[in-house]
Amino acid sequence: MSENGRCYREIRSARFPQGFPDRCDLTVIDAFADAWLLIDHSPSGIELVGLADDYDAARVWLLEDPAS
Image 1 (cartoon, helix red, strand yellow):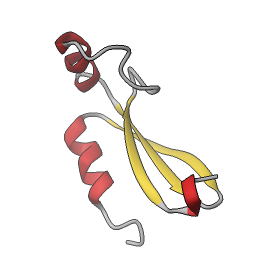
Image 2 (cartoon, rainbow, N blue to C red):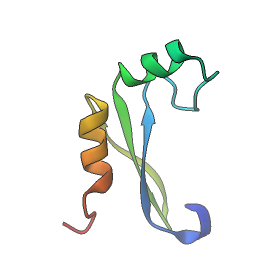
Image 3 (tube, rainbow, N blue to C red):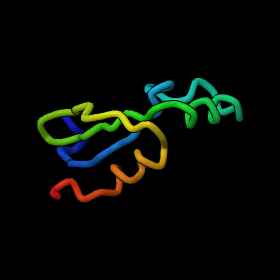
Image 4 (cartoon, rainbow, N blue to C red):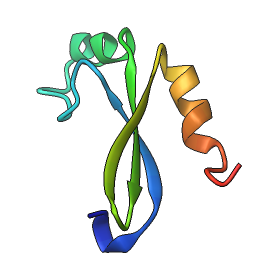
């Protein structure tokens, strides 16, 4: 279930889906060089709804109105 029953979207690096193992420059660069997971949170649960080829495409999806 989503945190507090809220609906929201999240993007995560496909290379580091659990978060960065460290915050060095090379790790951050590696994260942005790979695909991005598109994750939808709702009261019914968390769902992986897609994969974006790059960070810019992931940000567009993140900022879209989910109702449209």
